[in-house]
Length: 507
View 1 (tube, helix red, strand yellow):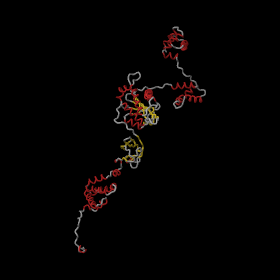
View 2 (cartoon, one colour):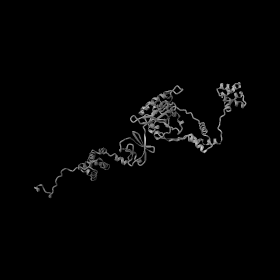
View 3 (tube, helix red, strand yellow):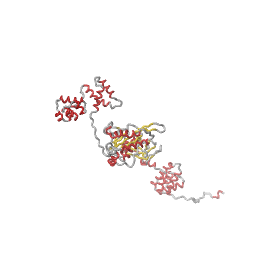
View 4 (cartoon, helix red, strand yellow):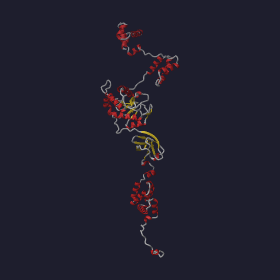
């Protein structure tokens, strides 16, 4: 507007159009256009001087509105659908214009169609300024462009993903190459990022990748169980960005563009044979990026992090997160579940027989859950086709049987008497297999409740004299009260009788 005022001031001084054009830097045609409107409205320079810039703009530079005819109204009605279709892969504006002309042969040409579409897409869309609090959010994402490592022996190329994480307040950045975007790789690089920062933010903001978000939603997305467990281990929350809303994570989108310029460009001519070598160079360039001052400022990402954000982060837990895998299985009739990865069997409480349970297992531990309640936990064993059994999981009858051992029976017998213990030892020695003697020993020891310690000890001594070692002989001795009889003399005197022949009879 100052240019327009200058044109009219020079015109009031009786300067020629050529002089006005030279002094203001405007073309002669532009000067003519403004002077024509000036004369048309019968204005004076005093009138112009009193007018505000807004009024001056409306008078000399009115907004050019499109002509609202029937063609324009037809096009305006379909522009929202055109914008929607343009988001589809492979769809072009020329393709949509051809469809438009088929439906409206007297419609706009492609140039006008494109101009109206461009005006429609540029309509006002408000953008919210985000204030990032120290220690509040960590934004994570994977770069669209992948890097490559080369197999040293075969020369095979393998593409690898590039993970980026940035803290909202200080913008301190972490970058690492990894083999995939799978759950275990995502958890690993996120954990490495937290240890790089030396603390835990209040929330992690991921994109809607499947390894972090099982089901996206505008209001309450479903978090992947493994990633949620990882977040719980580190005492942080997961706040996924909305699907197809890159502005929700504009920081990480922006840092990925910087990574392309600062890291990708620096290593583009190098050949890497291992992921470790690639990450070593990435880390070197990353440190240079974090320590470089921001443009127009006298501090870097690292300095801002040390001064503002480091103290706001939560402390790291004492132990690293151990990646858990899961499986749904049915409890077998013997009260065990099978971990198919090892072909090993683990016990659960017998009341869950036939129930569907969830196995969560790490490299060192197996946990079993039923309806979100942990019902069993065991150290992980890799021995195939073997059983890990906890006695407390068995039914009472099974638990009693599982506790039968020769040593246990001998200990119980010693508590009664040494004679009983000796007899129990002989029972085991006279059986080919210890388990053959378990029921006999159990029956013998159970007699103590009926007859007491002393009678059972005497019965065992009597049976030992007979050289018979089993349960029935003990029952017979006790039933006939043979344990109470005194020991018979070794030689009985010959009774006097007339019918007994003497030794001389045989001479």
